[in-house]
Length: 193
Length: 429
Image (cartoon, rainbow over all chains, first blue to last red):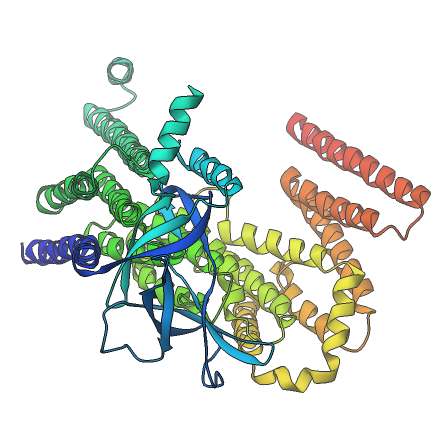
């Protein structure tokens, strides 16, 4: 009988762990959405697939870079804190890259940092980690086509909406000239039918 | 009904007493009960596997029509159903294997589906390894609390998938060597199976899954010159083969010894892979900096595996005598010597080809002596593979290659025919 209670105690602990991990994921992301700042990152999507999580649109961002006097102290692909601000077009640009978390702002993420020298100028580049937008499986390909069509018109702007808060981030949507990629994919499917 | 009738007839004829007839009746009744239980267990596991996989696929559709709150609520639903089923199994049905395995298998997939759905809802990036590790660790307690062998097998598949998809990188967020502590976590269950159930399919499937997982994971121990990995693999196959032949291991299913099969086929495949000249050209290249390699992880792994294989070989030799040692058993030693020779000369390629040929001939001989068509044809297959591989080398003329294939083809026909005829004569006598 004792071993039964012991097993059941172990089982309850496991249940708590199984509930805790997804709940923590949800709460952290909800906090980022409610308290974070919304940034717009210029992007280009393509459409691959994940065996468990389904179809997603992969986002290709231009590497965001800043100039530095010295980059020697950085290792290849070392993790660092990147702080963002908005440019004149309202798009996100990297403001600062550091090895320790900034204390003067909450608009930063933890990301892989690349270093490079270009025409004698030393630069640090941020590899933006929020590169997946999961979509309903029927919409991923039309979404990609919608994007490639929009690219013919250079005045159209494609950007990802990302909430950023104290190192965490949530990608909520990709917009083409103010229209959600999901909405564009839906209208494209409707037009084909 | 017919058993009852037959037994009555035997009692009437005075062949068996009514007591014996009763015992026979009870014996067959219990046997049919245990086979129906086993069938129920298989259906419970299959059902849970299919439903679980179905949920994962439905979740992977990414339902855009549902709001974020509905999706997050939904992500918990299968998991909570699975937890209730498992809780009931722990509390009330611990003696019912079908309940334990079925509910644990379902919960395993439900946990995976839950994390997947949350990753979709919040577009969480990252490679699949972080996802697989959290999934496996959250489900590992099921193996010990519900004594679920199916979850144990799924866990082994999961961590093997992890080590392979890590690309054997030591510097990523999820480096390949995490595999080893993860594997250690499942070994107590394997030991319990080994200790508690002398007969059981789950133990057999573990005998298959664990060596195959080790085969996939071995490169994660490589750091430095990877040429030694060839010898590490050969010693691993040697260990498996010798475990299969040791007195401590008795195959569960008649005529199929998993360890021997993997050890033997692995040894032959690796030798065939090394029968190309290019491999030995690469090996001879590292001679110049051989001394630098002696303290690398690859070298230490190779040394440990080879020592383990030596120990098992010595035990086999002591327990069974030299006459009972099979041709595959000492190959890891011969291969190591050929590899060491290969650092200074490419003559090793000739020795490897001769070695494969010798193994083939000795296996054919063993098959003929034992009157075993399977072993005989395995030997013929080894020689055919050797010839087929040389076919791609392209250094022999077409005529010679053609003649070799003809000889082996005729050999296949004649030896099989000879054994079948020998069997006929023996059965007529």
